[in-house]
Length: 475
Image (cartoon, rainbow, N blue to C red; front, side, top):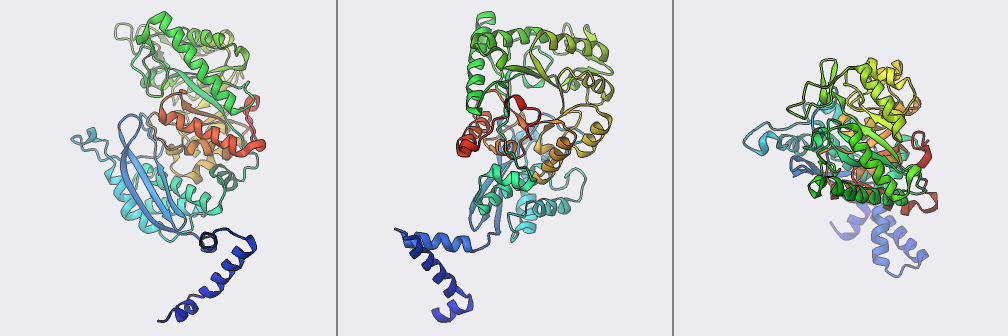
């Protein structure tokens, strides 16, 4: 076949002529580069290759990473992992061979991507996010994605989302906003972890996290500064009271002094805030993770202290009174999982008091059925969005819509096992969740999210809106 015949067969002559004319009109100083880019834009992008591998998360435990290729480039994503998997959330697949990574390898999930998911998605348009996600859901055919693995499906879903944004030539946050129909992109208020406890730290503190929310900042950049400064003031406070060993950190980067009570931790944080001079501009949030110290229908506040465990049981009513007292004594505006994941009655009772935002994490597990029940029964008033609990970008968008229709708050969340992937930063802006928790203002995998939010704010320029005082109703 001659060159002329080849050009005619593939109708390239007209396309090349159009590209040359465009280069002339643009008076391009580099016409070859201009024509190359023009031709790339003229060709609809498709998924050409998907390659997965096993990497390590922030805890040194295996997780899944995916490289998704289109004719526009390569797009990488990885799946985070929580400390435990709840019975109502999507299931991540692990190999179970105790002789390799203590049973935590994800080579089966990787194989599912390379051999099954890849075959199903190659040739698809990366901008059709819903079709891509539902193709994987249909391929799995299980309610909780237990055949292919939620970790496998999520990594591919996020990679496809990044590819779709590149094809549309828009920032990832804007692409997510377009997918969801959100018209008011918003920089979220960060919930910085300052003190870690529960399963995330080796101290005696039963609750999982004490966080701060810089709702008084005018921009995200200022909020990050406020969080960082408070974190470092807290380090000084802890060092003075407990010595340098009290500044060991938990899995999310929060300090883990060997304290025992709610108030002991809250006093430390309150003093640190006072030293910053920000005072009323910073509020406090708790992640109680009460399921971890619930025994039957009672709550053991000394569950992590061998010689005291079982000696300080609290009833649901006792816990409500404790939370009421704490919200009066400290500037607490949000409490996550104040009761056991099946203690719907006391969550509803406490939420009904209207004292603060009541966030459902273990209670809801980002599960649509659990969320719908909580909405109908007025159980809580905020959703903790963990994308890996539901498994795809499309499904995450849908549960956020459910929460917003119910006038709930939404807090986008990291996991204890994180990677350098900053996707949830763009997700929080695109879905205008108004709140994000990504750990302490330290450690690379946590700062990847916060630093990406800085870049987004810079890129949006004058259009950038920080949730601030409207953190619970950003859109």
